[in-house]
Amino acid sequence: MKKLLSWLKENPGLAVGALLSLGALGYIYYGQVYVNYAKEAEATAKLEEKHTELDGLMRRKPFPHAENVVILSNTVAALSGTNEDLSVARWLTNLAGVNPPPQNIKPSAFNTKLVQYKNKLLAAAKKNNVVVPQDFGFGFGRYVTHGATPANDPAQIHTLLTQWNAIEMLSDILFTNRIASITTIRRAPVGAEIPHDVNAPAMPGPGTGERTDEFLAITIRDNPAEISSALPFELEFTGDTQALRGIMTALELSPRFFVVRSLSVLNTRSGEMLQGGRSEAMGRAATAADAAAGAAAGAAPTAGAPVVRPGEAAKLTEPVPVFGLEKIQVKLRVDLVEFREPSASAPTAAK
Image (cartoon, rainbow, N blue to C red; front, side, top):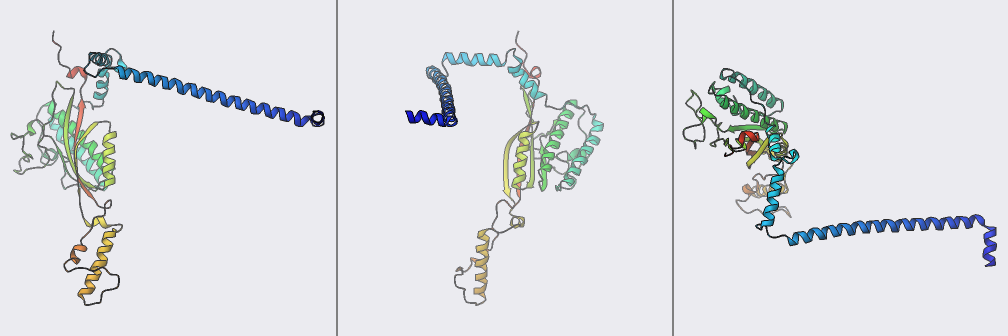
């Protein structure tokens, strides 16, 4: 003890430093213990909350039970009640607000306006190097090419203009995703365009005696008692897989409500698929073909060369598709869904 006291008198700085270090370590240890205690308390509270929720779920009766029916009824009442933030009517009104305002265009000015719209789309197609058929009318060839005029009916003209607006948006999506070409754009017939035979695959061109390929054998679903109507379209185009991915993403992100009904893809299997390289199977086929040619010329087979049976050389040299490099032909069926204001679609309440 005397030696310790003597050492402390001779080294007061070291003694004070040691005491401070011990105090700092004690403070850090206490802080860590407190933090761990707080975390443990928080985890325990969450666990108790989940246990309580689980107990409530375990006590709940199957769905047909009266208790669950009451819960569902109360939820529906809350969603359709006076709370604007939870109102179904408010939600439908917001959806209806996406629809473009109706355009008042006389039948005499319809064709001129449509030709202007068509020329803009053709210019956009040329700018994006998208090939379209000659005299392509984007589904409205009977008006912009054959000169037919629409019926003097504001409702029919509005539907036609809505179809054209949708086709403009769809065409812009195709152009911006760098497809190679558009083959056909079809739409559902409107009013006087509807044939007597609803199953007819196409409509006769006005004054030509020929049949056009601009119409779907599908009627427009438009029941005033429903909250929505649907305008069907069909697009046929050629592009690559990357363009198709971009188109599907753009349809999902579009401000208009597009619903994809069907999608079919066909490999073009053209020579373009081989640009940029050959597959391993193509390399084996070329080696076998060389061996077969040498055998036909009477040359001795090279050691290690594949043995080719008679008649197999032509089969081995057939083109082998290299997935990802080829073009694809796409047929896309898509509906434009438009929502009405709730007051315009709700049936009259019985008195």
